[in-house]
Length: 554
Ligand code: ATP
Ligand code: MG
Image 1 (cartoon, rainbow, N blue to C red):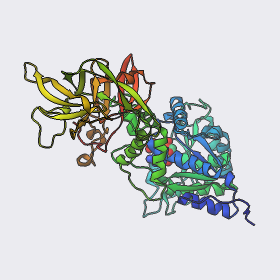
Image 2: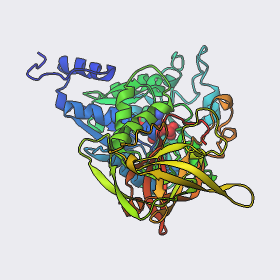
Image 3: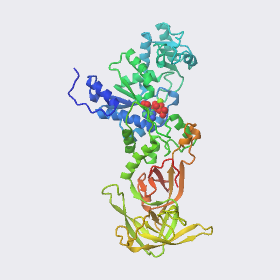
Image 4: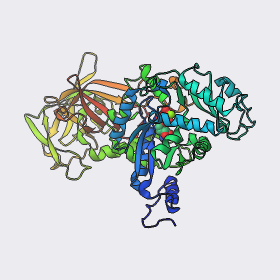
C-alpha cells in the first residue's frame, strides 16, 4: 500500500509531476527525493548552468530532499582544480548549498568492480578495434552496425585483458571495454558502446593510479546510484542515452534504480554558452578573463554587479519545459532591471561634461535628493548645488531639432531636484565649439516649492563642478553582433565595440564614498556598480535603463 500520510506539493512543471507520481506510487517519500548538479570541472559555470542548478537544487528544496554537487571528472585531460574552486564559489554565490560534494573519481574502484561483474556475466567484452574502426562499424540511423570480431571472447580472456588494460600493458586506444548489447538496436548508443578506454593521463585527483577511465554514459548511472540519487535531471541531449542509463542500472541490479528525466537547455539569443567557445574568448584575449562583465559566466554576471536573486528569478520565470526554445536576452535584462530599480540608490553622473554657469547664482546650497523613490521609506539625502555645474553635452543644442525639450539658446529647462534655468548665452572655443553655457535661474522655481508658474518640458541631470569627482565609466554591449550576422561563425560576429570606456566622467562625491560593489541608478543613464581600481573610481554598467540592448547608443 502506498503511504499517504504526507501531502504532496503541487507540481508546477513536468518533472515535479513525475516525482509526484513516483511518490504517489509509493516508490519514495518526499524527503527522499535526491538530485545532483553534475558539472564537468573543465571551465567556469555559465548562465545555462544556473538553470540546471535551479532545476536540481530547486526540486530537492521543494520536497525537503537533497541535492549533491557531483563533479563529473571522468575526462582527466581537460579537468583542473582551478575550475573546481570556481564552480564551488559560483554555486554559493547563486545561493545554493549542496548536501554532499563528490566526484566520479571517488567511485572509480566500484565502477571498475562493476565492469568486472559485467564481464563475468557476459555483458561486456574487451575490443581491439580502434576508435575509427568502432565508428565505421557502428552503422547509421537506418542501417544496423556490424559486430566486433572480438565480441565472443571468453569471460576468462576478457577478465585477463581488462586486468592488463588496468595494469598499463597497452597504449592509449589499443584496446577498450565495450558493453555487449545489440549492434542492430535502432538506438546507436546501444550498439555495444565503449564503457572503458585506456588513457595514460594524470588525473587531477587520482594522479597516476589509473590508466583506464570509464566513459560518462557508463559511469553516470553508477555514480547516481551510489550517491542515492532518485531523480537524475539532465538536459535533452541525453534523452537518447537514457536506454543505456537504464541498461546499466538494470544489468547491475540497482534497486531503487535512479530515474533520468530530461529537460530543455536554456538558450538565449546572441549568447553563446558553450565552454569551448568561452574558453577560446579568454585564451585569445577577446575578453579580460572568465569573469569579464560581458561574459555569460556566473563569475562574469557577478563581476558585472548582477544580483544573484535576479538570476534565480529569471530561471524561475522562464520555467522548466521539455521543448527546446530560445529566450530573448532582453528578457534576462528586464529581470535584472527590475531588481536594480527596486534596490539601487539614485545618483547623478555626467559622462560627457559641458560646463554650465548660473551667472546670477551666488553661494552654495544643500538640496534634497530621493535616495530611491521606488523603495518605500528609502528617504532623502543632501546634494550640493552651486554656481558652476556640469551637464551632459547632449542635453544642450545650439541648433535644436523640433521638439527638443532640453537646453537651447533662450530656452528653459529644469535641473533635476533644483531650479529652472534659462540659457542666455554660450562661450565658444577658437574652433567654434560650445565650451560653456551661461544661464540665469528662476529663484522661485525651487523643486518641491515651485511658484514660478513656468512650465518646462525638460528635466536634465547635473553635477556640482566644485564638488564633483572624476570617474571612469565602463559601458557594455553584447559580445556578439546579432541579426544580420546570424549564422556566421562566432569569430566573425564579434562586436568590436562591446566595451566602451568613458575615461573622465564627472560624478557626485557620494559615489566615491559608497561601499565597493554598491549598485546605483545613474539618473537618465543606467544602472552601474561602483568599484575602485588602483585608487581610481570606476562605474561599470550593470544594465541599461531601457531595453536598448544591441541598439546603437548616443
Ligand atoms: P557546455 O556545453 O557549456 O560545456 P556542458 O553540458 O558540457 O555545457 P557540464 O559541466 O557538463 O557542461 O554541465 C553540468 C550540467 O549543467 C549538466 O547537467 C548540463 O546538462 C547542464 N547544463 C549545461 N548547459 C546548460 C544549459 N544551457 N541549460 C541548462 N542546463 C545546462
Ligand atoms: Mg559536458
